[in-house]
Image (tube, rainbow, N blue to C red):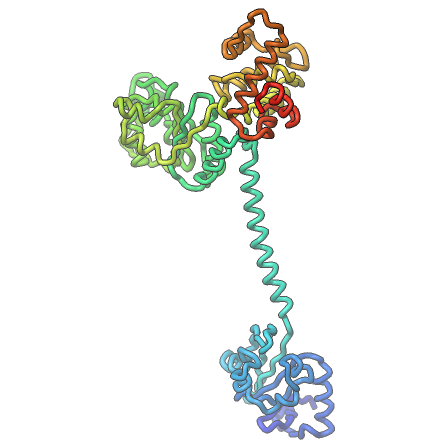
Length: 483
């Protein structure tokens, strides 16, 4: 006959047959010893209590788990043991409440973590009879989990730093930033890229304002949206409104029958870049200011308001403060644009960027035109000494010209256009006075060293800017008495 096994409230071991008739056996009977042997052979922490929390049976391993003798646990209340700090929380009240198998983490007095599973045992009448619990020491697993969590945080931090380092690479998306001035521009751009603050780029024509504006866009949350560049200086005043805001069909003679979407509307969910904003007429300044403030407009000839979600970046090569004083630029528009002003220095003020910029541009055009070219040292020195009034744009145009017009693989000094050689002669103001070529070259070299020494504090910085070794700089400075 099949029997069910359980403990009764008196500590007797009970066998129940299918008819519900129970046979009680004392713990010390021969039959019980068989089951007791089975219990202890499991080598696991097993603890049995009644519904009041009195411990009835434990395995031999249980005591070692909690740092006591197993026999000393028999007859003790788990509630008293918890008060003594032996372990917490308890399986008994949890299982009594839930009346189902429950798993939780328990902490022992010595700080070990146990994964405890409490199981309810019901009698033939469906009443809760016993609570059996077993545990596994998961201290090491939890420590490992904690370690992995810390490592995960560390990896995220390193990942963020690597991303930041990639963002701050000296050649960032076409931007050369070896000089301290340009590094500051890049760092500021990265700091503001994540927020939709208005930015105003200031600087001479050709310094790369539009390039850095696009860089900010690419690093912003709007990177997946459009980057709409509006050159305010190239759109005729009378056509600005129709180009910027668009127009409805039939709004004026010669208009597209279907109407036209304006540049402002195209910037939805993206970045609107107003280049050469200082070229706007006063009348158009009013319209642009209203649009920036309200982020809505009407197409020319339209009656339906258009809403636009955009981030604004503006740029100019003019002194807007002076224009405000002269009443040629609206003060309210100036303050609206000038939330975060960023000045991009001219190329002549950051000579550290000239050589890497030349090399990068030379590589790009050599690949484009399939013409491998290098620049001779003498030609490079001349390029370094130039004032570059047209800034980066002028340098790019010149390198492209040299790549396609020079007949040799090595671009020499004489390959430079005559206008540049004449300009260099004027800038350096050579006075021949019957001097030899060697004397003129030495005079020229001395002037370059003087100019470099004024810009850099350390000899290693001078050497890096001029593309020579530090010992060479030391020797040349000593030669000309400039040390």
